[in-house]
Length: 124
Image (cartoon, rainbow, N blue to C red; front, side):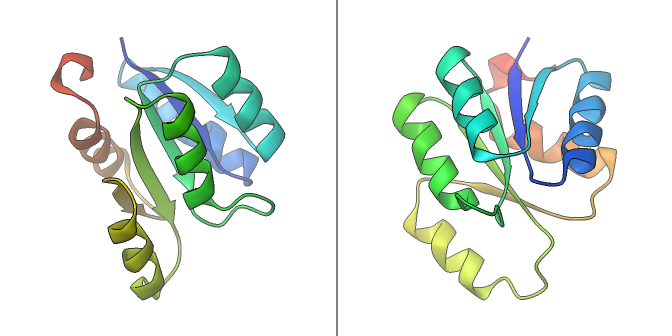
């Protein structure tokens, strides 16, 4: 079973996303700030990180770089509610392969993004 860390400063969204993933058979943890994110990343091995791009004190791209530095095999999905994606796409192209999902999203959209981001051995 794949382990997924969901990071968003909107606690309700992170919890909802975690519950959606659990209904699909994944084990999840949620983090609402940088401290929680780093604590979970230090203590547990994750197969996938789903992170909001706009975080207050450590933006999503920095979070992802930190996650990859600590867990090189981790898959990455970035979430955004931004309308203008020009800067986001530029940043994604400079970084290791990321997947992108736009808010708001449905369970089916989330499932599809997770299946693309996870190695086939971890897909439920």
